[in-house]
Length: 181
Length: 181
Image 1 (cartoon, rainbow over the protein chains, first blue to last red):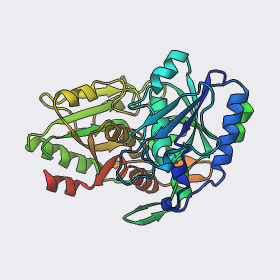
Image 2: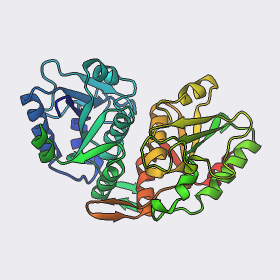
Image 3: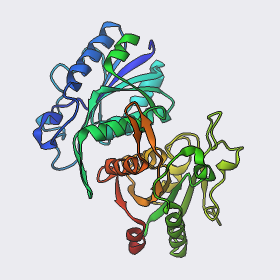
Image 4: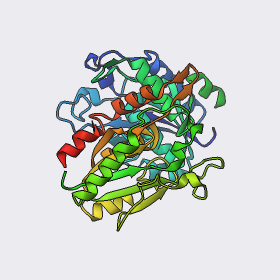
């Protein structure tokens, strides 16, 4: 994993708001911090992405406190922070050019939420030719609801990762990633 | 739905091969034909996409019979057919330019498989600013397997659509789409 960057997706305070409802993986933040520390300690690149929502009522709007990154997850030094307005971190940002210019060919991806911005970014990463790894226990999602009823966050998470595994990305846990650094 | 095109994803004979395992929505092909006939009958654009796999063993490789479109689903007249090598119909193809040049702002999407190429294309369509509609009963998927066991096709399909609904696309059935044409 020498040419690998850590790509942190939407690790923002808005996702701590109870309005999102029940969540899985309460340990995701601790695992994101472990990954962040390990990538920095081994001199690997870290890239931050945040969601600058344009939805009128979103707690992720740039002028709202929920837009801020979670404590301890802020960029340091020359780590870039890309703001995006859609789910994919590759659309409307300079992320792909940044990676190509630096010869970064592999990405370890964690953050929020598994089924939307993490999945969409991992799908595009894989389809654009990057080797993508999604860190299962460093992502989280929330209960969804459809016409049939509530779909628990744990089910959303499991199936969100099953869709990615082997097709777009490798799916590992934090400990497995740290063991390869 | 005046400015709406029908986008058919990977309606290819390979997906009839039993090697894929159990599938949901046996009526998907009939619904795809209903959509195709209705879009043609009302003079709306139809765009075909097929998967030209580069995987050594894939039945979707261009030189294999499974690469062919299903019977009755072939392009006619000036309907374009885009070949792609990844899941998203927007990556490595002229699809986005085709849509922008013609002022097509909305897409009705159906085909195979819900969780991979349909979902990824719908996600990118929504993120690129197109109004996307995914036709639930004109898509299908297969059983998946992960470390916990088998995930039935119907569950994969339900959750694949729950991820898209309201975030990337509207999710409707064929009858609802036909009622709006």
